[in-house]
Image (cartoon, rainbow, N blue to C red; front, side, top):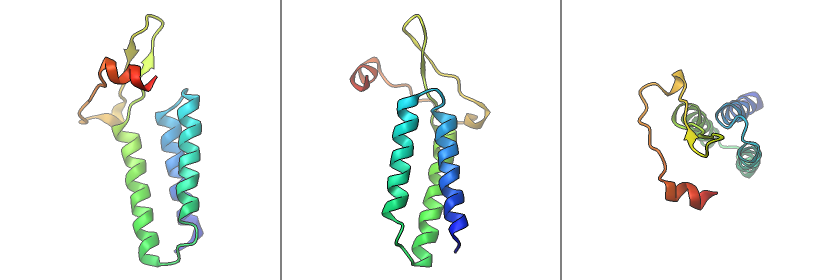
Amino acid sequence: MGRGEVLSAYRALLKATRKTFSGDILMLKESAVELRKKFDENRDITSEAEIQKLLQEAGEASHFITTMLVQARLTDSGTFVVKPGKEHAGATLELPSEETVRKSG
């Protein structure tokens, strides 16, 4: 198990978050901090089985971020627009309620 595989998984997650949260400076910053934290927490793991499990989880997370999340954009008129890409084909779209959006803002 090489360091290269771990770095590759880390880069794939960063790429997924950059694409999904493009233009959202707060989400980009916070997701990068969280990713770094998670990888740092597991830095000292030496068990090949545990490393493989973590790499698999990282791959699944990257796939989830890329295919299951879509960033809504606030328009000038005060509404939100969601534009799924071809990577989201076949996914079920769940829109947050107005109440949820207000609470998160």
